Length: 54
Image (cartoon, rainbow, N blue to C red):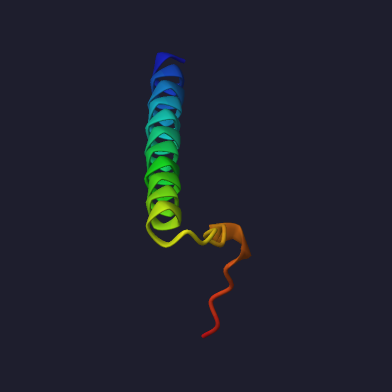
């Protein structure tokens, strides 16, 4: 029983860490887009609209 709880706590901590990393990456992209916008005067295309063709 305690082992299952420990595993669940470990998973929750890992998920919290991954969420934090995702939020940091999103903020970096937001700041990059803002810098590009200020440097060029053109509105950047949001990442969700960019389609990569392979």
